[in-house]
Amino acid sequence: MKKNICVFCGASEGNRLEYRTAAEQLGKIIAKQNRRLIYGGGNKGLMGIIANAVLAHGGEVIGIIPERLVKAETAHHGITRLEVVDNMHQRKARLAELADGFIAMPGGTGTLEEVFEVWTGMQIGFHEKPVALFDIANFWQSMLSFLKHAVQEGFIRENFYNTLIVSDNAEFVLKQMDDFVPKDLQRWVKK
Image 1: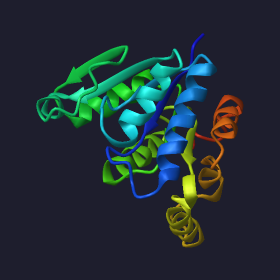
Image 2: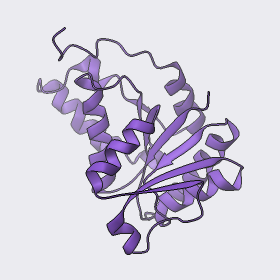
Image 3: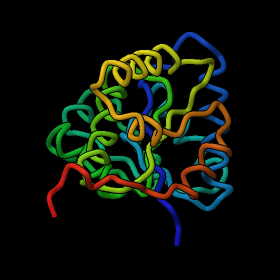
Image 4: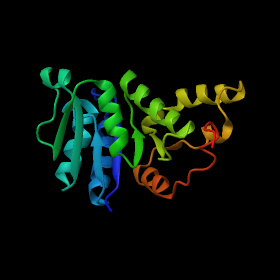
């Protein structure tokens, strides 16, 4: 069965060539490993780069995009399937529904919101899918320092913090996602 990998990433390319290169690399690996990219449906920035890389290597790409962004001419009309939804809430719900796991690449507030929503969903038992940070050029290190601070201050449980997969190596990230075994994720839900 083909695994659907949801990638959250910026609609900007960022200021480093490494971001573009890593998006191209991840897209190539997703295609070569016979996985399917699920993403926000955009044609700009890292979103467009990863989608084009998957397509260039014979892979499938499913994009979910709100109508407002289609009207703003940011939709990628060359992908395998583009689903247009009414709003961002529907987009995130559909991405989560289709995905077998989530990878966050560098991005802005949208990327942060998306990765925290799915990670929180894991914590409270809505799903048991792996969540990974593709840490290109140490992009996520400042956030990880803050999260460790939140652990030390008693707001995030250490065993939950440790569910995050973090690496700057795309193949390692995907392997860790394949090997992910959810543990103690139902603790917030009464049985």
